[in-house]
Amino acid sequence: MAQTDEFGEELVDFVRRVAELKAARSVPPDDLPTVLDAAIFELDHVADQLWPWYERLSSTLPSAGAGQRDRQDQQLLRMIFQQLPLPVVLTDRETVVRRLNPAATAFTGARAGYATGRPLTGFLVHADRAAFRSQVAAVARGEGDRGLTVRLQQRPSLPVHTTLTGLRPNGEPRATVLVVLQPADLSLPPGQPEPAGNPAAALPDLSEATRHATLLDLLDAMTSALLTCPSDDPRTVLERAAEVLHGRFADWVIADTGGARPSRTTVLGPSGTDTAGVAAQDPADCPLVVEAARGGSPAPRVRPDDPDAFGLDATGAPVLVQANVTSLLCVPLTRDGVVHGVLTLFRSGTRPAFSMAEAQTTDMMSRHIALAMGELTQKADEDDGSPGRSGSRRRPS
Image (cartoon, rainbow, N blue to C red; front, side):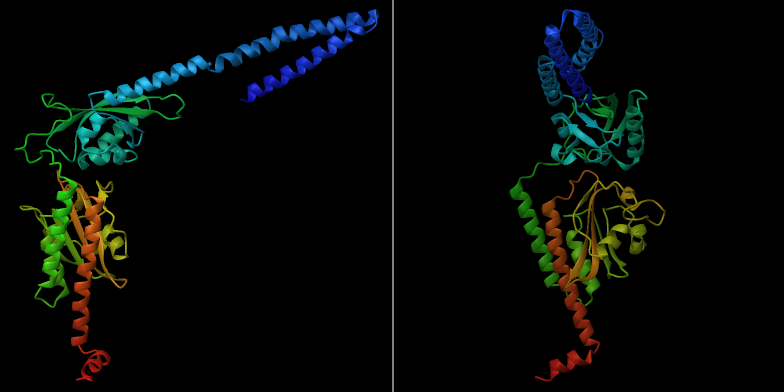
């Protein structure tokens, strides 16, 4: 643009000088040779300077026809990308998804609007994330195409072969990586679910009404458990609540009592799993628990990137990796601004991630649990003999 402006200024000056030469035709005959020399000089300037300059600018500026052709080519490529039967994903050098086609949406089980802007590694099992991230970075650096086999969290029994190719889109400063996904078993077409007999089969497509009814049933069961809890110990209330949530709502339920210094009360995991390592964990070493105890948000975390977010188990392994956690909820049990405990829910394997509706329901149940625990705590304080409160209750009688 600066060169174009400079050329325009030079052309304006040239036109002004030509006008002066035309006006000089009326000078005396003895002075005409000088005017003729000036005219020849200006003609040489046009031939040697202005015309080559114009050609250089013309070669860099796209014509209207070329611009139209570029737009048509872009539309064609976009249509091919959308209609391609193979799952295809565009990512940057850090595996952040920029675009994925409908076949990739069906294959990964992730909606395009949700996946865009999130790392593609979040859809892989923890063991494959580092290798995939390294290969994508190498392709983005221009070190050639790559290919490796990974596994998706939603279908870990099905190996997926990925082909990585570097692209340089027009007008973009950095390279883009094109990722093609194909099942290692080519007898299973992309996007087709695994057989129903397989425990890693695709999840059923439940209707919104069914999900709503399921949450209402869960709320009813939780309310009944809290109202009929026979114990006066707040920890027992939390244990009853954990039993309601375990299995039907979450694969793992971890309950911690206390706010400033939480202590682990209950750990319920899938059948056959060793929960002792998680039970022996100090909640103070769990960043998510510490954050929730400080009044953190109960928003769901889907495919958490940080494997150490829930700390380490007794063997020194990240809990989220050992439990194959695909989504989690970590909510504080708060009443009147006081945290009485923290409730953590894990879903693992092929189970669907926690939705926003389920997170809101969990937040509601956490308030009910905190109310029940707070009532028992207050009653215990009164029974221990707070003179002011016990005296004020006995005087009317």
